[in-house]
Structures are given as structure tokens and as C-alpha cells.
Image (cartoon, rainbow, N blue to C red; front, side):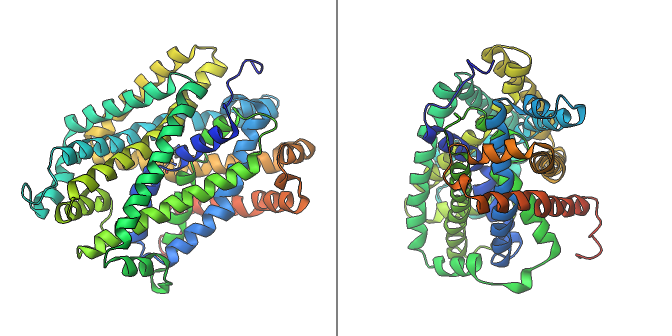
Length: 447
Ligand code: TRP
């Protein structure tokens, strides 16, 4: 199996595809709205600390685990633990999470496609709709089960189309087009936002120290989101890492992916908030920040329909390069562990995911529950699994060798030790706190 296993066409292919996985709705839709809800400033600082002290060490561990074993999650844990049942089930939980996350992620992505369609058909022109009507549109769309379902199916079909052709011809090729386009569109929008009167209040909101907004709950929300946004804790980075060559530098690649993901999240804030503030709207608009505030603003700016089209293309592209990675995890399990053909694996897993998305499309409370279970439980547990496995279970020599292999940075002992200590002590403690907060232990302390 190892010999004819798929590989990235180039070192850059991995970085593009993995940052495509990381950069997604989490960066452009969710991060700005939770920043808005948590009062900006200090929340962003805490988020940055979580990303680099918790998320990055886990990502390096995950990518290395894939690179060492050349296997998708279930096989990877099995191989390095002599087939231990417990560890294999950590990998299996990741595969299960891929099904669940993609099923509701695709529903949100479907709304983004619908909004692209609305933008093209001129719905966000001031002459066609009032701000009130545009704002109400979101609850109509998200409340319309049949509509949500139809676009969910369209988005899943797009994802299948990309994944079915394999790693080099599908996943990598898609990332080569999606990622540069995404960055270009974001840069264009950011230049526009910089010209607005709301730009300096937005910079102050995002980077100023607003200490009053600090609460225990926001620390935990920042930590939870750092897993989601980096795509760690589920085996997506593990699976992508398994297509690396021995000579590839996993350490520098992980750092690059993390930096890029963070840059995009901050850019998204610097696009959304200036527009929001310039039109006298509030930062704490919740999930409607992207689907209500932005369309209202588009309807009031010159050339707004064009910006709206650009924005929703950007959102769909970001979602697509992420959904590809989730479908790849689900499919890779059946390809590697069950010996299925890629075609059969991709088609049957996506059919399951399509069906699993039906309740999310029909009921918002089900949707919220899926998001809660995966973000607050499955990803942190999966992250804890990788950290403990790589830091405590895997043999020290093999681990140190894997860390150094193909990487100049990885050969520096101090870097290795810093990573190992974070992964051994700091990361598990932080995750433990997230899990306790999920059980409601801190509820009384954080009103
Ligand atoms: N990171 C992506 C985002 O920010 C979502 C995502 C893709 C993901 N693959 C994942 C989340 C794997 C968790 C696990 O939108």
C-alpha cells in the first residue's frame, strides 16, 4: 500500500491544499462574528496566543503522524500503537467527525452559493430591496428547508467533483486555482475597506486593548475556535500529511499554514468591520454579520453588486477548499483501510454526508447541536488524542527523527524541545479546560 500511495506533486501543493483546508468559513464567516460578539481587541490577542501555543503544536504533531505512517487516521494510530483498540478509535472518531462537520458545513456553504446567486440577480440593489428586506432575507433563506437542501446538494456535488480525481489531479489542482484567487479577491476588498471612514475604528476595534471585554467564556471560545480554524483534531492535517514525501519540511509548512490562516482571519475582520462601521451597523451582529450586514452595505455602496459577487465567490471558494479536505478524510479511510476504489469511496461517503445534512438544512436547532458537539467535544478530544499520542505514546527516537526529517528548523534541538513541552503539558491542560467548560463547570464563574 505504501509504494503506490498518492503524493503531492510539489512541496507547494501541500502548503496550498492544507492552507485551503484551514482557510474557510471559520475564517471569513465565524471568526469576525465571534470577534464582534466578544468585543474585539483582547479576544483577538487571546485567539493569537491559542493559535500559536496550542493549535500550531497540534498541527505539527498531526502532520508528522501522517508523514511518519503514510496512512489516514485509523491506520496511523493503529500502526504506531501496535493496533491498540483505544488509539485506533481516536482515529475513527476523526473520521466520524469528518462526516458530521461536512454535513452542516455544506449547508452554510450552500447559503453562500445562494447569496452569490442573489447578488448576480440584483437582489442587493437599493432600488430592488430596502435594508430591512435584505436583512430579513437571511432568516427566510436559513428557515427554508427545501432551499437550504437544494444548495447543500449543489455544494456537495462541487466537492465530489474536486475530490474524485485524486490528490494531484483533484485536490492539489483545485487548491492551485482556489487559493490564489481567494487571496487576490481578499486583497481587493481590503483595499476598498481601507478607503472607508470605518477603517480606523475597525482597526481600533480589532487591535486595541479593550480589557473590559475579557471573560473566561471568551478565552474558551477562542481556544475552541483555534482547532476548527486550523482544521486540527479530526485527522484532516494528518491525512494531508500522509501524502508528503520523506524529504518535505513538515515543520516550516505547518508554520506557513498557521500564519496564512491567521492572516486571512484578521484580513476578514479588516474587510467586514470597516464596512459594518461605515454603514452605522453594530459589530456584534452574530452569524448575520456576513449574510445580513454585508448585503445591506453592498446595497448602499457604488458598484455594490459587483463587490457582492466578488465577496460571495470568495466565500464559496474558501468553503470549497475546506470541504475538500473533510471529504478526503472520509474517503481516505475507505480507500486505505477497506481497499475501495477512490470513485466508490468518494461517491458513497458523500451520499452519506448529503443525507446527514438533511436535518441540519431543515432545523436550525439540529444544526446548532451538530456544531456544538463537533466544535466543543469531538475536535478538542481529537486534538487531545494527537497531543497525548505524539508526546507520550510514540517512541522518543522515532518522534525526534520525524521532527528533524527534511527540515532545517526541525534539526534545532531547542525548537524540538519547545514543541515537545508544549505538546506534553501546556496543550493537554488547555484542552482539559475547554472540556470542563463544556460540562458547565465554569458557568457560575462566568456570568
Ligand atoms: N478550517 C476550516 C474553516 O476554518 C474548516 C475545516 C476544514 C475543518 N477541515 C476541517 C475543521 C477539519 C475541523 C476539522 O472553515
